[in-house]
Image (cartoon, rainbow, N blue to C red; front, side, top):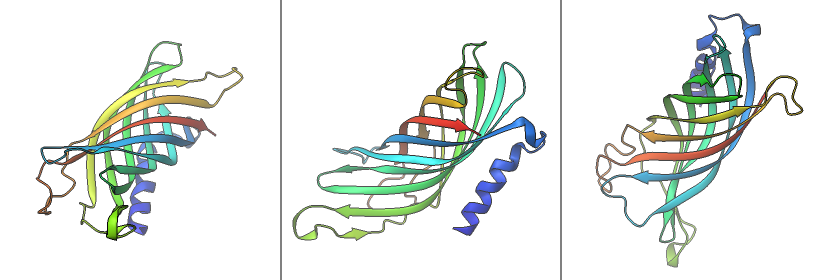
Length: 197
């Protein structure tokens, strides 16, 4: 866990080439609709969860910026009385393309996730409440993007932002597991509320 936190701190500092006062640090909280995709994924429903963490955003100018975060994210899937809980510390590195002075930005880029929970919970029959570990890969890579609206300076809600984001995995969750094929990946849609300090 200390290693994960250290990596997250380094990631947030990766835009430190700019003067600290030019970086907008903030917090993010959101609602996740997570699922899996792959040949062996059948009859599963989304797992609903939350995400929460810290962000740092640097604006290079009126049209372009960079956002880096350290976000705790509840992911996985559920179905037939079984819930797969895959939780990560995600570190997104997103380019932000500001759309004029509208407050909107198109966000896109990669994300690296560090697995902090890998648990299967059974809620049926004689196995109700039991859990097991499926040895998920410790690192998850994904790519994606979304749309964010930032309330501009001088407005009543200055400092707040609201956005939607879709991230799709590009690395396998269970490389060495006999239960799944080698092409099971994460996918997460999230609605996020942010506040910059």
